[in-house]
Length: 117
Picture (cartoon, rainbow, N blue to C red):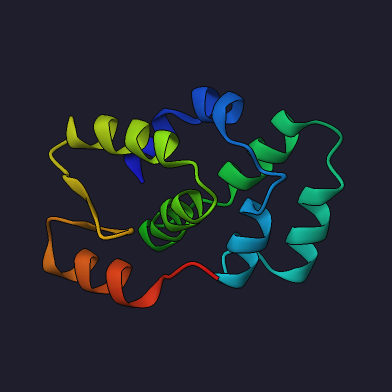
């Protein structure tokens, strides 16, 4: 979560929200119907990304965001976040199409619960 918060301005310019990311975030229960509609109605990609990133208020939401990025072929953004997060002592790994954190808790939650839809 630290990296997502710290990198918000860069991520706002890098993320592609319009080709499946919002749908994935909705299916992963990060977004409610109202949030989904509100974000979709934002005028620019940057505004949509800012709205998405503003909702990343927990480790769980960030985990689901990372899953959604991988599911929508945005591995380069996942790698950017993971590289910056590892500088804070956290270590993310890409494993067989999913990801986990070096802690057992994250690995079990992220690998077994959040899958592409």
